[in-house]
Image 1: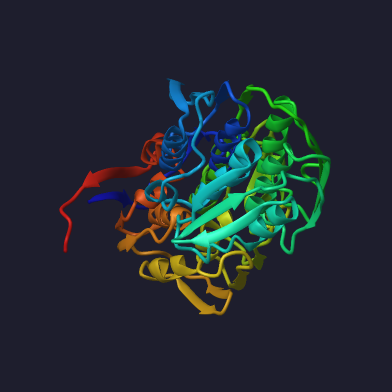
Image 2: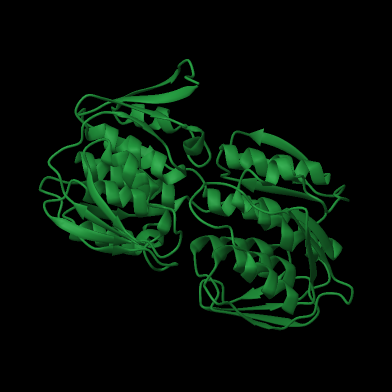
Length: 423
């Protein structure tokens, strides 16, 4: 069993560069299915979820060449299957991203129900309802989603009940091959949606309005392979910003657009964090106390749910009390019970967490409950008295490349160890 061991209370300073966005790269990889031929993706993070998506594409018949650590050359010329294996797609909820492209290319798909972090229900009702409006018929059996299009894909107007990123992406990737015009109202506005639209348009699609609540897609007959650079990972950047904020820094975080973390940075400034925005970077430092600030997660441009755990960790050391409200995933407060083992004072009431600031954390043995919660526990370990040991670190590997190495480069006393498992 591998663990991350952190010795707390050491200065954290320097520079760190984030990788390409996990939440974008996975969908861009899936989108290559739409354009038979050789597409090249650069700035791809070398993380576990990307490896899983690569295996999914290979199972479908794609050939993938790793040109360098962050460049994938994906040849989808020989993709002839439209059925994805459960043992792969069940590992992450982003597996449903192949549904739209397979339907767009073949008019049919069989995709296993999604898995991933245990942070909430994997309801994909909006994906299915939206695709049904385009003419897709579904049969749910034996844990699989079986899609067919007996009359082809027809453009239409779809209004999402919730600004779902996954549903917006699947609809976009199917609609680019539909006959006529498709309008998605209440569409997700995340930067990753814009990144996907930019790639689709480079492939020959006609997608307008990405990044706004209404996206219009004019269907085309054919798409072509492209070369595309993945947008910088705003959540990885936010994680290191939070780490700099809790330790005091100064730390410069590079490789992302600060605009993509607009509300996060504003909230952090209200907490007493000093932030200097630059060209694709931020300089983070803190000399005074952390001030309590209420947070509620919402779709972009609201406060991202993927930054909730890191921010709760920061607020757990604030001078006062505040409330963190989780509106996206119902189980994302599992992190609170683990950080409470380190001395945090957090009370959960439904989808609200009442956070009472404490003086300090104490090192302890903890388990990463999910991807972002694992990173937040490491963040707590940086300032805790004594040693913190984090297990179940496979969650962290899903979304952070060279996590321990980057912490070491900033001065952290941290190591990754292989220890005997206790049954």
